[in-house]
Length: 371
Image (cartoon, rainbow, N blue to C red; front, side, top):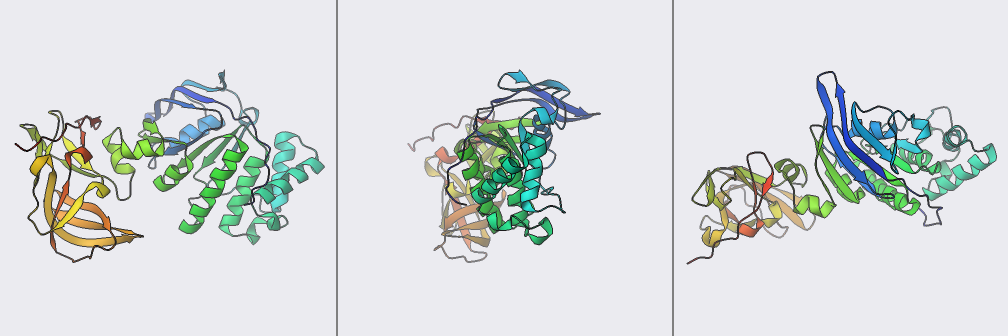
């Protein structure tokens, strides 16, 4: 994509206040509160059925809430039809007109969505295709394009209108991994240059963490946590967020608290009295060959045997079978893999995150100093 000049637009401030949506007995959304600043990109991340697409449809005006209010720049949008919201949308399955060229797909959106003259619409379409680096596709129909090219045209149709809000509903789920990485970089660059407010729905955590200025993690129709990608990863507010975000995810161990420690199969970790589980990220674990490791100084410690390893660039993830279950340990790629080798994995108390019976994260106590 070229770095040419782009005429910026003023994105709208979006505010969801207690948004609820029911389908009979099913609560698809349960009192969602969310504020998105003008020009901000927010990624809605969650598993299938978490409510993220339902929330996006309500923002678009394709569905109406059964409770709460949705506002653009302090103006309620409840009951306002989609074509009067200044919103454009990129769908998962392109939704291009198969009998029209790339240019004509954009021109149609501009003429009927923006009321532009044919000449102005064609100029805007050409400009947009150049911005996306696909000017050579101007005369091709969708059947003559690859999946990635079709999605670029679909994105171009959405941004050509210069809408104040752009909504993207899992726009890259049908593309291969390499193309997804390439395209999401282009999308972020373009949205930031345009200045539009954007909501990006995905179930892919890497995508959410790369695209969003902030990430809203959804589960069972509610937002479990919203924050910057770093905050979501480093300070997960709930056990669900801790285990949903991260590849491999956080290792979580359940136990019973007594005498200042949470005790489970093969481990004992310092924890508050209300803790029912303790978690640690794979990169915060240390792997020691043999079973001579200890938990001196308040360290977390588990013994086990290496099962298999996954190479990830300059690092690898060792999967170790322990009495508490299979755990992932991230190590340098130079560390050799010896299947069934006995090992001890340890972590300092400061790397542990404890969870209460409601799944919410608790304050971690300082490690006790050896006497």
